[in-house]
Length: 479
Image: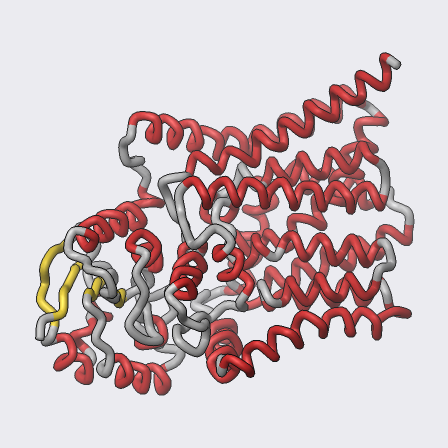
């Protein structure tokens, strides 16, 4: 009876620790991060009665926007509490998966590791629940179903993941290799949600926009990486990620060499496909590694438990020291943000300077706004739409499809990857009449000033400068 009570207490202690780690993102309650603001702004446009792809430009699969519809497109407490719940869900899913492979000890270890590394890494990678993070739940559900030989459901969850992030094709590939005899059933399951989404796109007239924005723009974006030395960049960024996730790397190596052959090849395939997904486009952005994180954690949970069983003292010290690296590097920021929140002051942190500027822009527009007013932002500043809760007048609500220069380089470059269509889009913009125009780019990159495009000059003449912040110029339309 004492042993049972002791196990119960340990489980609750670990569960409470997982919840505490998930709740750390509440410290970011007054901030928004890219790219979560993009998807929240898309949800706000939908709440204004607009259909994505048809009525407004949205270059991501649809479910990221629908996720934020569940909280009405609000930021602040609704957003951070919702994301905290999502972290708990993915921790439960990885618990189920690790337990399906091994035992409850590995399951609790995997859940705890996932909560830890979704808290202690670069905030821009782990705080915003954009496409890579939102795919984690259906990703884990698909792999769990593949492990349990539920081919149809594995396909369904892989399809849901695909409607969140197109890199879910690598999740489908993992499941297919694991379930070669049941591939046809798997593909049928995958087809169910994707066919339903296709049907909705055709019925609503969004299909052509979906193809243009998600696939044509997405393929061009992936093919034309701004990285000058992609292989070196990949090696450096992978090494950086492994450095902050050294506890996972050590546990995974220790565990992988000791796995049964059947588990070794399957988990090896999962990690290999996930790493291939990270490498798409050769950018190796920190948030891309979220696709690799679950597979590494599942293997590492086994390795850590085996190491603890062999030599609990030494293994515990090594794992603890390795976990101190991300804890010491990223932990103090939570305390700093919490302190700022309590005292109601803005954080003095360069990473959030643009978001704080957007909050100032929104306050100034709110003082002049009337019901039914619309907004257009030159640059990539979707957080302004979130803070104002306004929508665009037409399809375009940022300058990427108008300049052809993606947001990952438009602060310092002018090279267009989408030149011809962008010129046509600028002509379409001149037929729109947003009430407010915010230029959030020219002060940062004068070479992309909208006035430099001849077809926009007459259109811009209808706007007068009414206010400015450190990073933005605010205009209002005059007849």
